[in-house]
Image (tube, rainbow, N blue to C red):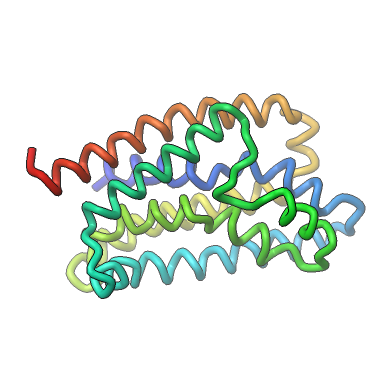
Length: 209
């Protein structure tokens, strides 16, 4: 269980990529008061936690109702994470998160906690796909301890994201945009390898080893 916890934490951390929130949060809250920044960071994390909790709890049941096998979603989830990894490696603007038009709209919003912070940046498609991949085989009724341990990793990543947003201004002065891009590229390589493994596991489960 410890190995699974560590592996899931690494995967979820790389997918959420709290480092990428630094320049975004600084840009969206430029000129705002400290109270506003604190409120947006807290609200974004709480909303993200609620979304992720619902998906972790009912995501597998939803797939079952739709007639989608876990192996099929594992393959799709792996491909989706691989696309995210490519965007991270090549430092491209992620189409899985938001478009340039949405970015322009973000700057005019008074409340940025729901969009784009909670969704699609923290609890985005990649994060939701990762939850379904890992929590799908784990039933909270049959294995509540296992489920709780895995979700503790989700809470840990959300806590890190909150800390990063609270310290965004100071951290950006230290690492800068270049440092954030280098970190993103390194994490993208790790995520790409894990995404390929998800696809391999899905193919094995579908067609046998």
